[in-house]
Length: 72
Image 1: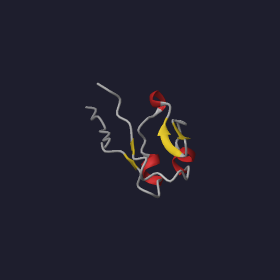
Image 2: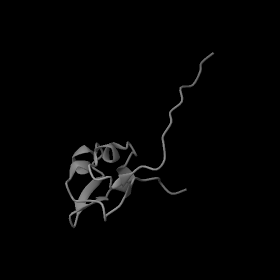
Image 3: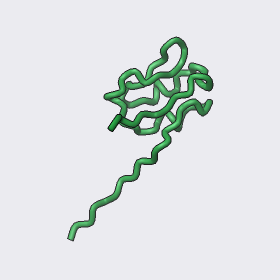
Image 4: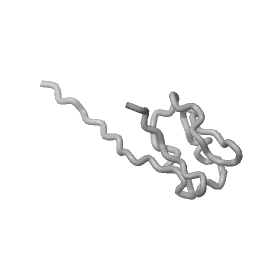
């Protein structure tokens, strides 16, 4: 199974760099003035880039749900 990554629409990206600054793994960079995930193995799918993109260019289409295990 392929690793799930945020989807970046280059036609919406205006190259502001907010996603680059927000990425805790430094997995996002500006390439030719547009955001791109350049370190796929380091992306933890935290969705910080999606939350901070003012242009709606980044989408994390899968929701991550953590469930606490019950101990008996």
